[in-house]
Length: 257
Ligand code: NAP
Image 1 (cartoon, rainbow, N blue to C red):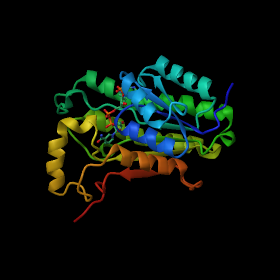
Image 2 (image 1 turned 60 degrees about the vertical axis):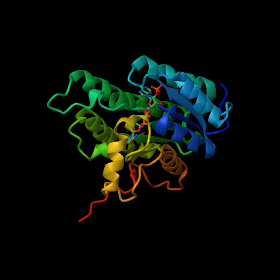
Image 3 (image 1 turned 90 degrees about the horizontal axis):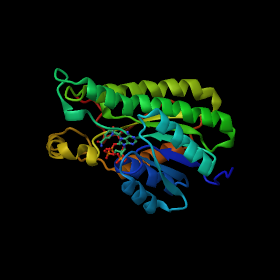
Image 4 (image 1 turned 30 degrees about the vertical axis):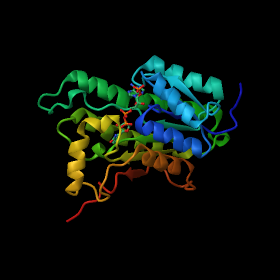
């Protein structure tokens, strides 16, 4: 099997939005990047073209689907022989953004399946791959989970999304704890309001709320900025840290009086 000379990152939902920002930022820091997508292959190919076709390739999987997850890991390992970094970024918002008194089980199952069950079992697969290959043979082996300010800020019109992100926050602690003595570190990045397709429908509302003080840094964030946060954590010289939460939210989490 060929073992890629660069550390390899698998970025779920790496094709668009924040995932694209992460993929590009990691490539700039020397990673080869497997760019996962679910439906939009063209977007994934565009992301790869923005990197370098030798150092990036698109890999299909619905992260909510068991067989897809297994095939995705097999595809990356058979092409490049290693996964040094998993970024669990793929996610969707609540279907219809309904008030919790109108919430549907369909949205709950879909959102929790993609945002929480998928990353949990993908982390299990990748962690076992890392243990098999030997963490000492990898470069800074790590898992980085992209949660949201919704892990702690309640929005009653997307309860399932909030629960999925709060769950992913606990998932970060669980994997950080389990893998701490194996040399695999696990972190959480909590983006704030980021200018992507996901937020485009509510953009004007957010712009207005930001004008009235919603975020200390008074603007929406960009996918590139979240990418830089993730790439900084992935390559940081902080070997005694694991399980930490990093905010990329313009200071939204700061309380004031
Ligand atoms: P986005 O612009 O809607 O992009 C979503 C990405 O996820 C796309 O690459 C999409 O690929 C992929 N994806 C969706 N469902 C998938 C599935 N079942 N399997 C694999 N990939 C799937 O979203 P975004 O704003 O970049 O958000 C990325 C992550 O950041 C999400 O977890 C989100 O919850 C989180 N986040 C976003 C914000 C924000 O303000 N935007 C804030 C906090 C946290 P396809 O196009 O192929 O479907």
